Length: 314
Ligand code: NCD
Image (tube, rainbow, N blue to C red; front, side):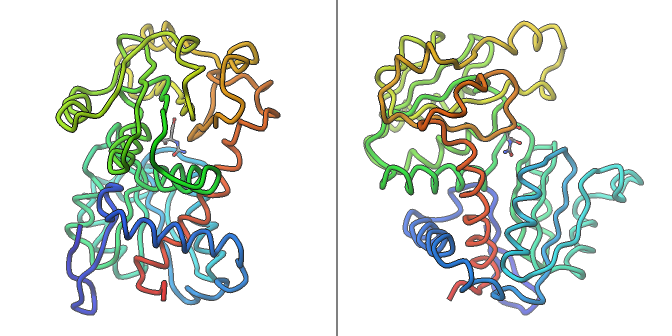
C-alpha cells in the first residue's frame, strides 16, 4: 500500500505480507540476516527517528519486539499499549489519531482488534504504518518473522510440507503465513484443526483456485511423519463468542514427547507465542522446537523492516 508522505514523496506501508514482492522480501531477509551477523553496523542507523507503537489490543512480544528493534537501530520510541490509556477511550477515531501521531513520529506500528483498522490509519497517515495485527485478519510482521526463521534454519522457502495446527479460523498468524508462503513453489499444506476452527472459506477457495495441494484433518498424530514443519497456534479465546465453546476446544491439541516421536528428526516446531497448553514444556529442550529462537529473528526482521520503510536501508 502506498500514500503520499510529509515530504511529498510516496510512502509505503505494510498491511499484509503481499505488500512486498518476492524480490523485496528476499532483500529484506538478506538485510535482516546481515543485521543478525553485524548488529553494530546498524546501531545508529535510525538515530533521531521515532517509532510510535499504537496498540489497541494486548501484546507483549510484538510491541516489545518493535520497540527493541527501533532502540537497536539507535532510534526512539513513543506510544501506548492499551486503548484505555489513549484518546480512543474518549471516542477519537483511528484516522484522527494517526494524523496526530504523524506529527510526532516517523513511523508507526499499530495493533487493533478491528480488522482493517491499520489500513484506515495508513490511508490518513503522513508516516509509514505497519499492521501489527488486526483482529483475526493479518499479522504481516509475525509472518516475516516466521519466514526469516524458516529461511535461516532451512535455507529456502519452497518445497515444504507445512502443518498448521490449532485455531485456523481466528488465528491471523496462520492466515498471513499461508498467504505469503503460497507465492513460493511446491509447498503443501496440512491444516489440522477441530471442525469448528477450520481455515476461513476465502483461504480454502484461494488454495483451490491456485491448485495448491492441501488437506484438512483433525488428528495431529496421523500427519506428523510427513511434516517438514509444524506451526502450532493458541486457541484465540478473545475472538470466541461464548466461553463454553472456548473451554471445549482450548486443549484439543497438546504437543508432547509422544507425538514428537512420530515427527521427522529435522522437523521444525514453530509457534507465534504466547503458548498456553498446546505445546507441553517438555518439548522446549527438543532441538526441533525453535519458537524462542523465532522471537529473536522477529527483532532482526523488524529492524530490517523499519529501516526499509524509512528509506534508510541503503
Ligand atoms: C499472535 C497474535 O497476536 O496474533 N501473537 C503474536 O503476535 N506473537 C498469536 C496469538 O496471540 O496467539
